[in-house]
Length: 153
Image 1: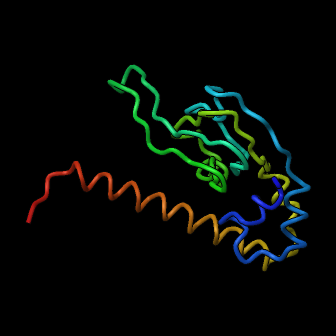
Image 2: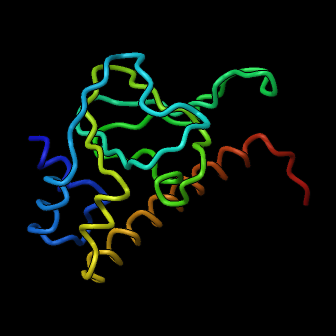
Image 3: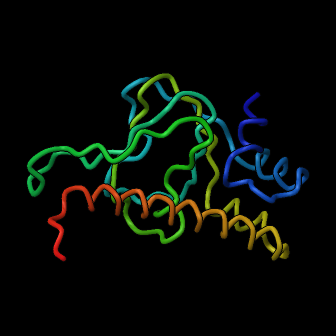
């Protein structure tokens, strides 16, 4: 069941079945308890996560320069997490926490690089899919900002 969820997620759109199987076998599946931190804000993250079961929430945690914590998203089965820092290798901009018992597929940047080496078609498809996911997230964030930003006409 976990593989079918992985193979059907947006990250795998247009990826040949044999390539999806290789990618899945190169990663691992980890289980997180409710409330367990998957990614802490500010850490270096070199992993891409796909929710196979359960769900996570993405938060800007409370800290000295932020007057309160802010929930950015709740992500369920098939969603990717950690893609920003996975790509740019900068510290993470938010925290990700399991909201129920959650299974995540975990793939390191290094393993993905090994898998796509010499396969430009697979590399292009995967990174295009990641780009589309990131653009969707940006559009969602923009629509939220539009609700709270004063409109000037």
